[in-house]
Image (cartoon, rainbow, N blue to C red; front, side, top):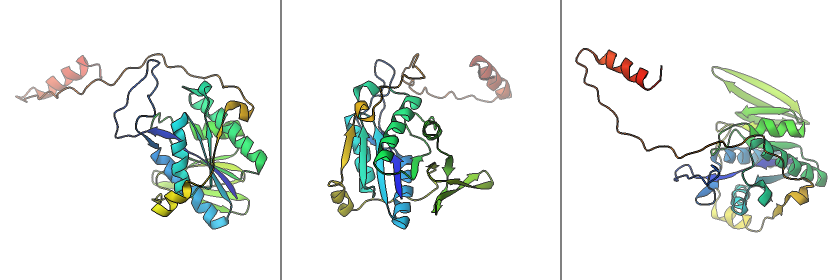
Amino acid sequence: MRIVVCVKHVPDLQSDRSLDGDGHLVRGEDDVLNELDENAVEAAVSLVEEHGGEVVALTMGPDDAEDGARRALQMGADRGVHVSDDALGGADVLATARVLAAAVRTLNAEAPVDLVVTGMASLDGLTSMLPTALASVLELPQLTLASEVTVAGDRVRVRREIGDAAEVLEAPLPALVSVTDQANEPRYPAFKEIRAARKKPVDTWALADLGIDAPAPSTAVLAAEPRPAREQGRIVTDSGDGGQQLADFLISTRLV
């Protein structure tokens, strides 16, 4: 089977983040493979190890976003595709879905794509919209938030945890699946896999290679500013009127 796994290069959660003049997150300073996409890579690689085939790591972003695809190759993906074009700077999630869909269609024209796998969210924007938006543009059945993924014949089955209950869903291939961080334990590549990944191909495609123009954004940043520094907490001494002081504070801060 042939699987396309979507990955994203995002700022490290432990690093200091900053905004540019347009209110967009500054990238390329301390970026890593999105942690939740590691589960998607692990799911895709495990399925191909079981059934045979190829895993293509697909990413979109500036030049350094290729590092995200390279990390997926170290984890076992066979090939990388990096969509990079200056016209895509600041693309929102819906524009990103349209571009990734065009890349998946281009890959499908080379050889049929059986499954598209994504993580549950990217840890920069945390919209969690990309899997559904991508499935919609590709007109594929979607099975989202999977904690377990199996493939039998021409069907994919997932298990999805919902509170104290669980759902088991099936769909015919081709389909799109998003996985949670409960789906597996991503492998940590050994030095041998890291060296081998250097020889695996990563193709760089521009919009012209996909035969599309830059999609018009569906959203706009109206304003953005850094989060204010945390202020020192206020200690209230309860002399019998602590409840009243708390109520007055909540009212003054418009929290109630």
